[in-house]
Image 1: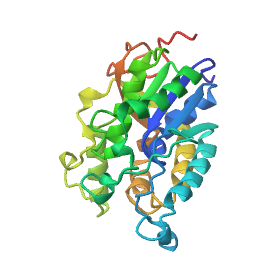
Image 2: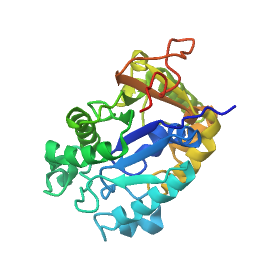
Image 3: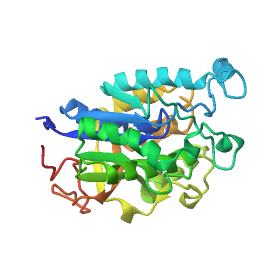
Length: 289
C-alpha cells in the first residue's frame, strides 16, 4: 500500500535548475505521488552554466546569453516528469536574481547576481512563500552549499534566514548531504570501467562528500528512479547522457539515484528508523496543521 502524505507540505530551496533533480528528484516524486504538496523555489535561472549540447552552445552567457530562458523550459519539463506543479523563481515576477557563476569568477561581481543580493531582502521573498504555503518541512543546502558554489551558499543563507523570520514555524529542516561511503563506491566502480567521477582519485577529492555520520535520514525513492532519470534528461544542457551521472546508473545500478540522503538540522528524528538508526521518512513526527 502506498503511503499517504495528504496534508504534508514540503518546500525545497535550490540555486539553479537541475539542482533539485540531482539532489532530491526521487524524494520530490515520492512525496508528490503520496499526496504531499511539494513546492520548489529556484533562486536563479542558471545563466552562467556550461552548455553540454554543442548545437545549443550559442545560448551561453559568453555568446547570446539566453541560457537562463532555456533552462526555465528545462525545469518545467523536469517538474512535469516528477509530478510537481508548484515551482517558482525567488522574487518572481518582480525581481530576477542572476546566476553568480563559480566562486572566484568575474560574474560574482555583477550587481544583479544572487551572490550580491542582500540576505534579508532576498529572504523576505522566501518568507512570502513560506507564509503562503505553510510548509512543515524545508530542504536546502548546508552552510557550504554542498560544494562551495556562491549561489548554493546564498540559497542556504536565505532559506535559513527566512525560516527564522517567518511567522510560520517550519517543524523540520533538512540539508542535502552525500555520504563518503556511497561516493567511494561510485569512484571505485567508475575506475573499474576506466572512467572517472568528476576527476576524483579518492572520495576526499570531492568537495561535496560528507562523513557518513552527517546522514540522519535516508529516503528510499527506488520506485521513482525512472522519474528522476527522466527529469535529469530534461536538463539536457547541464547533464550529459554519457557523463558520470548516467554512467553511475549503468554501472552501479539505479539505486544510486533512488537513495537520497539528508541531515536533519531542526526538529527531532522520528520512527521508523533503518538498521543504522537513520530516519526513513521526512514526514515522520510531523503535526499536520
